[in-house]
Image (cartoon, rainbow, N blue to C red; front, side):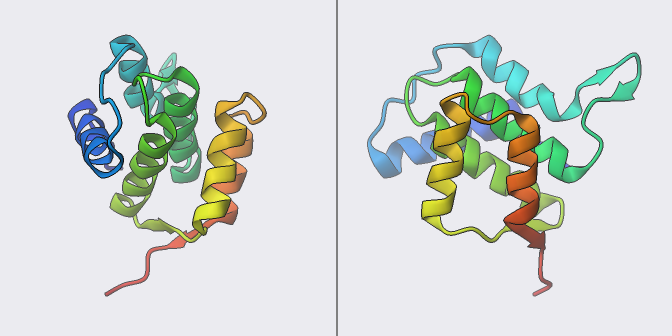
Length: 130
């Protein structure tokens, strides 16, 4: 399993800042740390999130819910999740309207990690070989 680092997520966020002209300030560094560690979380040596889909959902949900950045949390969470999936052999297949809706309902407290996991399962596939 290839996890994203804090530095990689910050880099994603900086790229989004440049694309959309948003403020890239990290307002909650500890929430960024929690988001980075979420997919790897274990309790008493047992992984909380077992599958790639569950781990991707944990990453997305935590970034969207914990808002570590001043702006662009939804875009950063979605982009980080997409990269995480790609590094591990899957790719998102959803269109932008579907992605915007998934991010909106997650960040507005209407979805839990299980809902995000189901959305990723239904909107991704094994990455096709080149």
